[in-house]
Amino acid sequence: MAPSSAPPGVVPPGVVPPGTVPHTSVGSSSAVHAAPAPYVRRREDVLLRAPSRRNQPHLHLDKLNGALWFGTDPEVHALIRATWQGNYWGSWASWNFVPPEKKDQWWHAFIQHYYWEDQFHDEIYLKWKKQTQVTVCGRISQNRRDNRQPSYMSDTHWATMVEKYSTEQAKKKNAKAVKSRKSASDGKKMHKHGAGPRCFLNIEYKMMVDEGLDEPPSYTALARKTHTGKDGSFLDERTEELVLEVEEAIEEMLQDGSPLGDIQTDSTAASNSKRYLLNQEYIKRGKTKKGTVYGLGSVQYKNSSASVPIPVSLKRNLDVDMHMSGFETTISEVKEDIAGVKEDFSALKTEINAFKTEVTGGMSASQATLNIILQTLKSQASTPASTAQPFQPQAQSQPQGQPQAPVQSQHQPQPQAQSTALPQHLTTNNQSDLHRWCQELGM
Image (cartoon, rainbow, N blue to C red; front, side, top):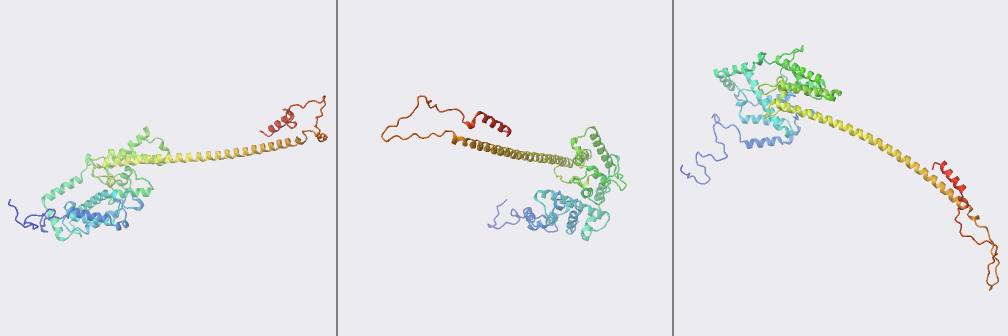
């Protein structure tokens, strides 16, 4: 290929600069409908972080503080349906035929109507996408079967769609889908429920509110609620067989040897544990070839992940709930033990304070008694001190200048050495009296 002779900065004819999108006519079948991904992503980030979203209704899985959630609150699905119906304008028979920029517009409109935490973003997008797919396909299919043109589709688009689905190939595909939808395994009748247009998640939430439950009802209770008539009889054979088998298996398990242990003394704990067992058995027996659990409807998609099979996801969530329930029970028991220890410590502290008061009072009484004894001894010792030595007159003075000679009789006894005997006030009799007095005082 000959090198280009175009001057610098000028793009030769037929050469597309890197990073640009080739321009095509609107009527071309190869027209590029999607905007560049970076632009769409930047716009989505701006919408998600808009301060005004804080004032929008809150979406939360556990409906904290009155939050909304898919399936549980019909208004969320109503907004999704109104969004795509108000901005459709195409002969698109299903989600797969909708242009990417139109999908982005619907999703961005949903972002601006609700607020949610970042941790739920991926899950909310998947649920929004699934609900949009279901409603688009369901509404258009229903209108096509009834040959009724929807108000959100123009005459031209409706004529194009009718023409497309009037071909022999489209009719064969439709007949195959109808047969598959009405089929039933094991020779049973087609699946049927009595929930009507209500979502199973909404029915589950209503059961919690009406019955005053803190936890969702068991899968067997939900299946009975959604698959029985007004007289209580089952409308679906397979659901009836599944529910009865699960309930019978759990009753036998509890009779043979309850795995609930000592928690049966607590009615709430026993009820929750039995619900866990029922759900475990229902998941194990209700698996289908399509990777779902029979008879649960939209409830099985709660907390589900696109990369994990539905039964595995339900089993994992159930195990987490069981562990959390046991953890909460342990925490409650620890709190009770701590409260008991605090009460014992408080009683011990009271006893110690009382003992200190008693000891202090006893020491004070003993000190007072000792002071009295010491004062008594001091008074007794000072009383005979003045009369202990007899009075002796002084000798007559000698004339000055003469030496004084001591006058001493030969018969006078010599002065004795200092006596070591006890004074008169501490005689043996007095010591006996003091000892008897101390005994009377309890010393």
